[in-house]
Length: 468
Image 1 (cartoon, rainbow, N blue to C red):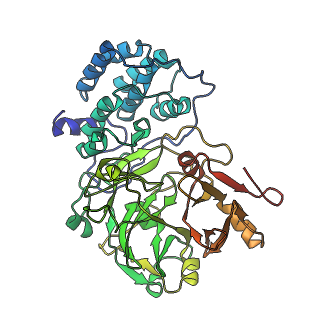
Image 2 (image 1 turned 180 degrees about the vertical axis):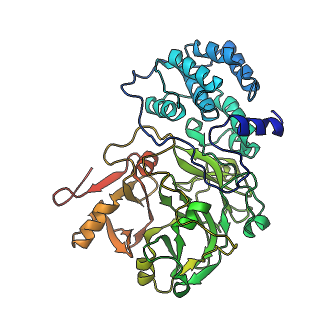
Image 3 (image 1 turned 30 degrees about the horizontal axis):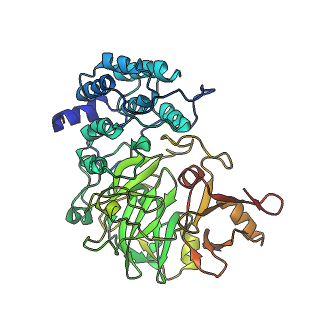
């Protein structure tokens, strides 16, 4: 493994995504907004089964050992001639770490043209990865051994996520979100210490005020509302866009609230009932993504989670079979939330850490579609249509388009399917079963909900009701 000096060389001299300007905590715009596949691509290329073969494995060893500064371009060409399309996943990984026009990028594009029969454009990483996901090409044997090399050159703190041989990650989909890991010690994080190397910093135990002292936030501002044991709290969207993770206490319980800005998905998990022998879970943002969904992890065990499901996918918590218990999140305006929940509290204007927050931290970053690889989009709705996703049990999910559901409720029409009934809460939505018990729900972009729950049932209301 290269020294940290060489890691810095890779991340500062070659990478397209981080400017290395020294500005900590700033969410990075890291890719061109697109989720389209290559127009009229050929069928999935043939690929071999079984081992790669000693020559190909040796070439991959040489290639990864040559990173970051003296990349073996001839080896890239030989791998392109190998005839084993599975290698394309490693080529896609390299494209993430080198900018358009770089010698490595151009060598990889040429090798992919030979290997999979597609001419990819100059800014190739997103379309290449989307196409490989669409084809569902298998990863090569030993994939993690080589994939981890460029990732750990950028961020050695990601090593635990590659160390678990029984990990539940589909490593093909694991990509870099443009920032590094938030591994600040608890005491520094609670003081609001910045991430000096550029992470997305969790907000731990934020200061809160009552609704009357929350008049600094406009009534039309968006909040993510959570109620636990009758205690309500609002998390302002613009603060969540900066932190993307809050560790808090509400209703006598410890909760973690991740917000995936790329998925428009705020969720809430109880974190105070870890497996026996483990500390209370402290959720953090890793800087990694899986099909545009943030990968969160526990600071103490370095166990990674599937953020959508709450299931541990690597490390000691994966070994324990641990799944975080989820509680509903309501997306509402602040004015409607405090009218519906007059005893609510709201995170204070400075988060309790003396920080100021811009009104629009992302500056329209996601306005033109997903900016990271997601693969093909379920055609039942547009990619960034907002849905209320509802968890029925371990396997079954239902989704309700938010706009259509609100319109129906305002018109006095029922919103129900498969035993699930949706009602309004403030300016948001909640879901209940046939016995009146609340079902866990939260909003998300359709592309995110549908790719993590591809068999989800979708409520629609064409001419009086329906589903598909």
